[in-house]
Image (cartoon, rainbow, N blue to C red; front, side):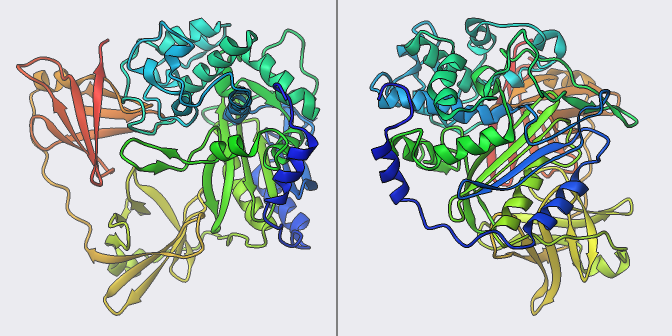
Length: 557
């Protein structure tokens, strides 16, 4: 077949290799799901559409909140949303059909389709574009670019590529995994080069039309979309306002589609049951990205390959001005969940709700916790550094300004007591329990991915902060600038109190000097060394965190 859904004989063979689905969802699933969704979003503000299917049958579909606050139009399962990066799997599938047709090879270099693209990105393969290992800089991480003044206008594919093709590459093709929207703009460009049609037209003809996905389409259009939700953001001080505008040519093949949770459920059923791709292409889509050093990253082609309560999952989320989305497919249970929300930052993250619904449908729900008073004095024997069994990492548990925190790789995360020495995080499914073992305090961390607790043993008290070194402002000024850290950027600024750094969408952290070139990221546990010679501005900085070393190149202003 050329570019359409596969013939019935292929469908049957694909279905035969599917694992047998488990028993039906629990009897109390609908009531429990209603309670979960009602607690996640208010009825009188932006909210979400939710769907859960088992063996392709809809077992739960709800809307919560308002698609249009001013008009008081409610959200339903038929409300249309911008789906964000969930669109990547559609772009990937369209390109994989072209591979199956013999028109593209996964090992073709980008230069075969875009001869003028500069090196080293030109040597990135189609496979590396699809699995985020191309090393090409992501345009959504360009400092200050993702603002309405830039996003509220139309761009051609060539204009989008011009935004990032001259940026310094964070890595060489195949050397590192970094989530990358530029890679999927290039996926769209390859589809256009091969088919002679806009990428979204190829998606519509090859995928949406044959599957009768009536609402799935490119988000760019002159006519109003019937049943479309408005996207909102939370105002400072409370309340909601319309999100900044973004023309859907900006997310392009990385996120430029709209649709409903119903159509996404129909799509998931077809994709994961052999009606979209050949078995060989589907297997390629769900194969983890493999890097040149032999390591793997749990991402296929437009699909994140993760686990939920010990069960393997395939899914993706999305975020775009005013909209946040999540989707999970659990092959072992043949259960699919999608959650589309129309407010960013999210009142409740859609991926949290999707994970809870997936676990609930699978008959293995997460524990629910309520905040309980905590006796900080009684916890003092538990404060300290914990060595994690297996991976050798460390986690610190401490109190600061009357609050409790843990810290591992990134900034401190506030934790709340749930009673019985159990602690949990807001908007996070992880929780832990503290116990006294034969050799001292033990932290049993329960992650949402697995069923077995991660064991960490206390090795000592929280270390005292080392004394800061005075560094002349003339020297500090050499380090100010923007640095490429893989996909995101780190912006180093100088104020009265000294240097600070902001990485991507994370908060701003102070840099505490340990020498004239070495600094500690306050409250994070990372170290930064600026590489400067002869009094010139720094060319790069080296980030060292938990044994991982990252070289970040400074961008010329």
